Amino acid sequence: MALKIHGQATGPFAENTYVALDEESGLAAVVDPGLGALDIWTSFSDKGATLDRVLLTHAHLDHIFGLSELIEAFPVPVHLHREDAFLIENYVSIAAEWGFDVDPVSMPDEWWEHGDRVQLGSTEFEVRHTPGHSPGSVILVFDGGLFSGDTVMGLSVGRTDFPRSSADDLARSIQTQVYTLDDNLVLYPGHMQTTTIGQEKQHNQFVRAV
Ligand SMILES: [Zn+2]
Ligand SMILES: [Zn+2]
Image (cartoon, rainbow, N blue to C red; front, top):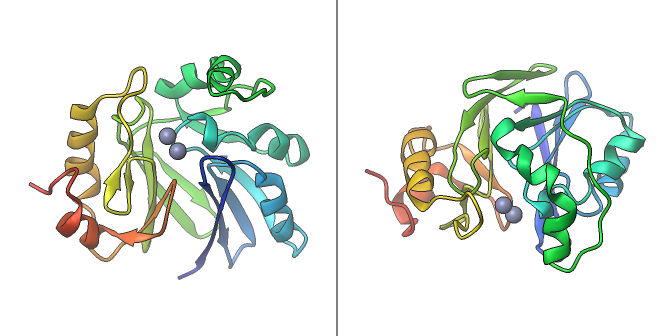
């Protein structure tokens, strides 16, 4: 696989920050920059990789803790689905509710549309809108795997007790957009370990395959 993926869990929510490196071109994307994302990225830039863009599966606070610091040092386009813009707008107050004192983050540059294809060197990501955990959640599918954010995690699914979350939407999104993918794809979640589509379809008790 030409795409090399490094995942690291940090922060009080143990969110996974991913660096996806297209080895052929040396271009990389940071997916969901959690706490300390700049440090995680710097070990790659030190080895000559070039940051091309930041990809957000959704905009819950834990997955943007490291965003401002990262794009101040490496100014690149940031992609998000517009339905999650309210989470960026309200980041400071949402973080305060959880007891965190943060600076505002600027609005992303590019809005995802369902079916978009984003190129990173020789790697292509297909964007699938998967509302439920948040209204603007997406999964990013590439040759061999996908970044699932908090839509599906190993034998679990994202919480739906947040404002503008929906358990019904989540179940529909997983059944129509996730479980329809190839069983062998490796799923890189927003929290916890990697899994596969086949494993989730067979054993995930929260949303059953139909
Ligand atoms: Zn989330
Ligand atoms: Zn999360």
